[in-house]
Length: 82
Image (cartoon, rainbow, N blue to C red; front, side, top):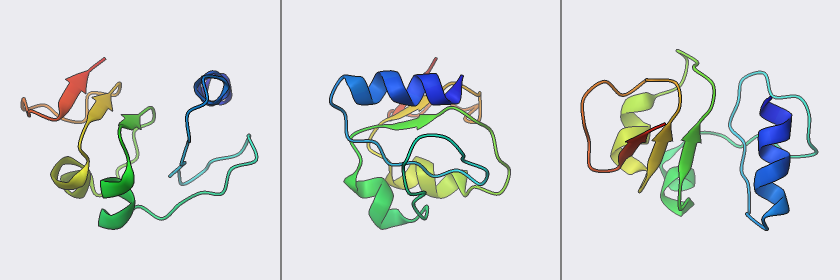
């Protein structure tokens, strides 16, 4: 599922950065999750749920978050639940 989702996003000419603890698949280099990376993104898609990620940092620094895993329970102006 994850590989087909990334393939479909890339086919629409999106630039994709991957931050994942166990990412294997498309030839993408996994990025380090930090404030600078988050601030450079137009959108952060949460497609997997890892407790090791700093979701408070994601909420604070990402301009737009699409949360498909229900990580953000409280409403926030930059979070869209999907």
